[in-house]
Image (tube, rainbow, N blue to C red; front, side, top):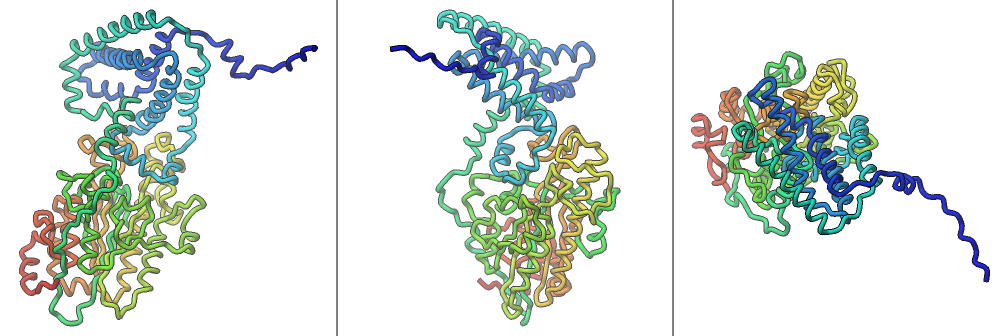
Length: 572
């Protein structure tokens, strides 16, 4: 029987590349990978080391070179025993991808990778991820992720006998250890001084930062499943006023997003970013600090009843908070969201579903909505209330605010007085002036939204209405080489922790409770924080409970408010 000739198969481009690719030893493969990870990806880390170095000239250069050698040698030592011929390319790919993307945020935006940043990433929705993509990120990914990945999979790793491999790894490990220990000992005083003052620098070293922070998050911060709900403030009750016909209350709490106090002209900023609010009789508190530097930390903390110094994220995750207590005391509590959710703070209260018609009016094709949707949603919600129904309401609005990096999406043309703008989410590529203008325009738009909300409350004649606005955290727009937010609190600049806070009360509220308003007016210049929200808001709602900390209750600071309480009677 005649054997049929086999059809000729044209080798793939990848196969031809592989055949023509160089063949290197595993030892050299690991060394090149260590140089890539330790040197190429971490220039932002080395810039910080150089910035914190107390020396000049040759001595500063020597410390910088020593630092590079220590990092490269440390990665090399790790890779020597982690990578073997059978898994080297897989492990290299993981390190290149993780290190490449973490290095982008560190080097381009000054972001420090911490467990909190891992939490932010896990809680980020699709819209926020879309806002992070830019031409700059695509170029970075192509050059520093895809290209090295291709090289890793094209190159051939030579086969070596196990005894020879072990001998090579042992000798190379000894050499790496000599470099590491020798340089650390020689520069010990310098490294000790730098890292003692800047402990979070390790969050700038890729890919170590992403890997270590992920492990830390899952060990310490990841929500534990199936924990029983702990009741809190079970004694909460409202103090009823003895005067007949006292109208019920509507308190509107607006949780801002990424607004920083120093960009509010109400706080002395040179550009007029508050043209509408400045014309209203608001109370502006100009010395307020946040609980965290990211939404995933600040929002749960604000509603937990725990001060920042004692905040326990795991406990907050399965314990009742401010909204539960207000609901228990008789308030109709409603959450209306234009952000990425309430971070579990509103799980047990009503969550208002924004009508489709409003979404069509204010949202783009991706589902991202302008904050004026909150004004229309509030008006729609209030229009359904029966004026004969005497139940009081606590309504929480969660803004999109100034969420970055796509600041240009956070305002409309009518509220963009500052030009030129940075019409890109690759903000590090914009001029400082354009970037600042774009962020400031988002504050102008927030000013308009908040003013519209106050005017909506003014029209509710059957209620005492109150308004409280506070941002969850601030934002860096290039100051100190930092962008966005989420820096470790210990090293976070004031731009990320100094937040705006405003209040407004209707004439009916002021007439019924003048002592409350006078007490708050006297504290506008006082040093305050998110710690004051939980006890002070409950007191404003006439709610009493043993869980209200009098030290942080703003109304407890005034003797006048105490005397007023003597004319009130407790009613469970």
